[in-house]
Length: 248
Image 1 (spheres, rainbow, N blue to C red):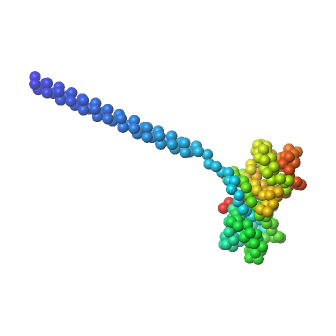
Image 2 (cartoon, one colour; image 1 turned 180 degrees about the vertical axis):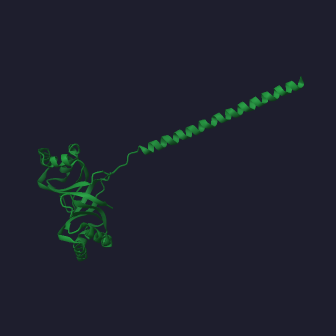
Image 3 (cartoon, rainbow, N blue to C red; image 1 turned 120 degrees about the vertical axis):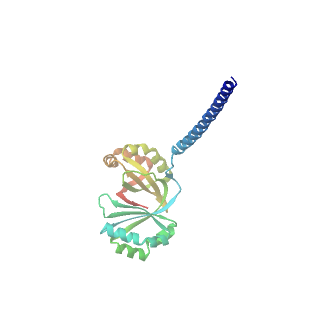
């Protein structure tokens, strides 16, 4: 009888210990789940934070356009003379080739100091380097203060660089901003704009062409003509279409 009571007591103790252990194990997963949920929530919040791709800090740039005999030969020569540019505080940014003439080259560089950049453009060593690279005719240089850029990646490599004169820089900016949706509807996405470093009435505008059919039709439309007139554009703009072939 005593043996039976002892066995029953031992069995009860074992059950209490078992239940207590199970209860402890149930608390642990709850803590881990809360931690995991918090981590997941934080990661999701971080992942959905949009990246700002718009730059409004003024950037000094020099734009060069010229024709070459052979693009591959010119590009090799251009890369070989990078030290010349860096010595004048000039940094490669974008290289493009003409859409209608692939031997027409578009070069955009960033300049630490515009006065040094202007001096570099007249340097005899640059002229020699260009001749070595097969540049034909006289290149066109323009120093621009870029005031707005969108650095987001776009699948289309086609760009339009348009230069024109306006009556008033601020009035043009306001009107241009108002026409954004109209451009988007016609296959055109804004990339960058600014003005001549010495004259803010001389505008330089770069856009991406994401739908050539719509964009080319819009270039000839009355809607664009009216938009220009409303924004104070003087005379006929000059447009150069090119494909981006290299970004630095």
